[in-house]
Image (cartoon, rainbow, N blue to C red; front, side, top):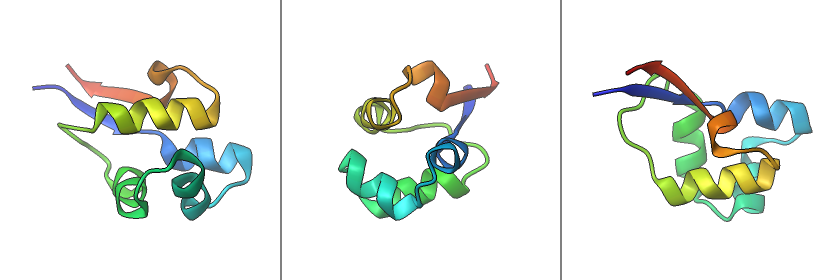
Length: 70
């Protein structure tokens, strides 16, 4: 199974937003955003949350996800 990392912390920093602001703007629970920001490796994620993050950061989903292992 592949592992990924969600680049939410870096993308938030580029915008000058806190994780709380990302949560509010993307309409994703703060606990989810915090989990993505602090987890170095994930095996599963909520695809809808990825779509919302990509939309709020105005990037493609591929820019939100970093593939660590395939």
